[in-house]
Every structure is written in structure tokens, then in C-alpha cells.
Image (cartoon, rainbow, N blue to C red; front, side, top):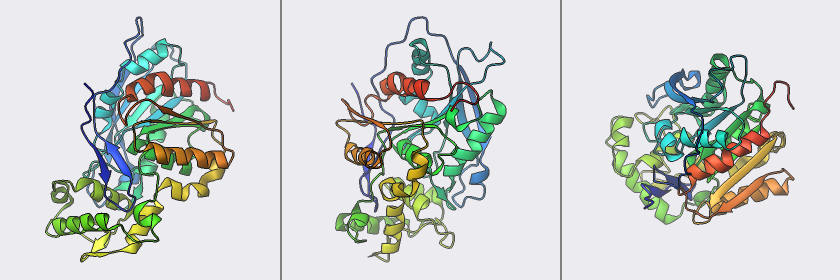
Length: 365
């Protein structure tokens, strides 16, 4: 029986942020005769993460899947797909949700062209970096787009060109794929967004800066809870606090406000419109219009979401905005919940998408 370990509403000014933890999911049957991939677990130093005020590690775990032919075709170079995990989990748990390496092997056996798969770990002390740029958490946006990509190109036989790089993510990773994809279109050439969270600047952003009272009250409770903590580790241990703290650390950093180095949406029980504005400004539906030129350069953009997933409404809005600008994109609402089909989607939709839309030879345009 499918079991959702965690699906919750993040109680922040971005209201509507739903993030899922590790769950059982529909898994495609193993493909007879599928050739094995090679798995390497490495660490990649995050120059972009150095000096982060939260104390998160800067030498991060990264899992690399090398295709079946990689070990024997020594002169062959490959496109790379970077896959971003969701909130509450890291790269290792992400492999279990999408059932790697089985789904990659099944995709290759089913006709998808071989690529290198890279899963960077962006889990922080509050369970998620939001793939954002923050003095408090570190610059995970550029860690993925620059540090990880640069390391992989330097240490593996890649085709080091944007047209041969794909970016995909699910839930918080879908947010990350949206954010990084919009802001770093010079790095990636094809984009697949799975059930993205955090798209919409709802709540305060939708009410002229005024926080809905139910969120304000929960923010006040959080403010009281963290008042006596002496470190991010203590704050992270507070029941139910991690999500709001993760969002605040990513989107409302404050180097002058120890020990957490972040601003909460209330101060002394009073709502802080400027903090709400910072959080709302990090919603892709709020900033997408600034990045249309880069989005036009993608070889292909695709997005999917389950018909029983509350995130489908904002995903549909993102699709509609792309359509309104005449940016080609495919969009599917499939039968399922937020997490029930991620392994199947990865093997039978994500991998074939990149097989079709990435460049497999140097100089391809």
C-alpha cells in the first residue's frame, strides 16, 4: 500500500508550499536484459557554500550514475542530467524514491540514449536548501549550477556544453529546477519540472503584504519557540519548525541576527511586511517574467504533476505563463498523488525526454 511519509503545507508567506518525504511509489517492472550502470558516491566541494552562517557542510555528497557503455567505450563522451531531490530527503533517499539504478537501466534498455546522471545532495540542517542563494544556508543555486557542473565536467567524460546538460527535479527539487533553470539558462539546455512546490507568492504576496491570520499565529508560535535557542541545531530539533526555518534561512537571511541568522515573518508578535515581501519575491510565478529571454533558449521544457496533487494548480499557472510568452513546453497532469508515480515518471517520461532533447555530439545545436 502506498504510504505518504510526510506531505504538509509550509506555513510561510509563500503559502501553498507543499513538500513530500520518502514514500512507496509505483515502480516499473525490471527490464529483462537491462545492462547495469556504474554507481559512484563522491563528494564535491561547494565554493559557493563556503562561510555559510548555518554551519552546513560544504563538501557535499553527490551520487553519479555512469551508463553501461561508459567503462568500455573509453573515448566516448556523454550528456549529463542533473536530478534534484525534494524537501526532507537527501540524494541517497532520492535514489530510493525514483528507484535508481533500476529505472535508469530500464530506460536505457527501453531505448533511451545513454547519459550520465548526477544527484547532488542539498539537504541542510532544516532539511532543505530551497536551492536558493543565501548567506545563511550558502549559495546552493550556484553550487548546483557552477560547482557541481564544473566538477563533473572536469572529472568525467561529459560533453561540456549547455545543449548537452539537462536539469530535472521533484517537489522542492522541482522548485530548484524552475529557479535554477530560469536563472542559469546559459548552463542547461533542457528542463523537466516534476510536481514543483513553492511556485506561487500566495498568502501575504496575494494580499497586499498582509499575512493571513492563521499564518501569522503560527509564525508567532514559531517566534516564541526559537526565542531561547542558542544554535541552528537547537532550532532544527523543535517539533514542526524545520519547514518555516528552512524557508526563512533561504529567503530571509540576516547576517546581523544571530544565532539563527534569519528573519521570521513576525517580530515581537507583529507581522513584518518586508520579510513577507522577501519570501514572496522568491516564488517563480513572481519572478519568471524577468527570465523569459533565457527560457526561450531551451531546446525543450516539460512539466508534469499528479491530478490528486494540490500543486497542480500552480504548475498549471506556470505552464500558462510559458504559453502566453509563446515558449514551447509540454505539460501533463497524470493520474496520481504528489509522490505515487515518481519512479515510473522518471523511467518512462523523464529519461526519454532527455534522450530526445539533449545533444549527444559535441557542437550540436
